[in-house]
Image (cartoon, rainbow, N blue to C red; front, side, top):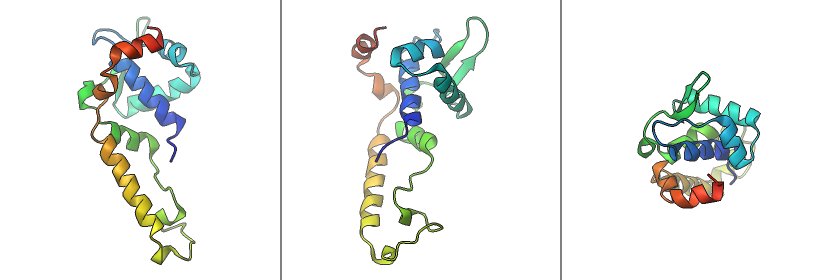
Length: 144
């Protein structure tokens, strides 16, 4: 299973902003430079993260973004669910589009559903704060 780049980049924005002191704002340009992601693409992601109330956007000359709540209150599993939206990993996961003839007796869909639940059980055990416990190493890798 692959997460969308959108989700990956969204998590990276949250990681970056979680490493900022509370009184310091991050900029899209700064995040773009560190990760090598286009500012245009990051702008769309930041807009969505703001709508989801995960980050706050401060306008103006000295504006930027910051986490909307403490990093330890931001559950990674919940964030991935919000950013991904659709976890229909097989045709049979969606009753409206399922045309598989073996679906009623298929064990594969149950195994994959079980795996998907296990995936989220693990992610639900992490917060954004947990993702930056190695902050010094991350800073060195990012060159900040």
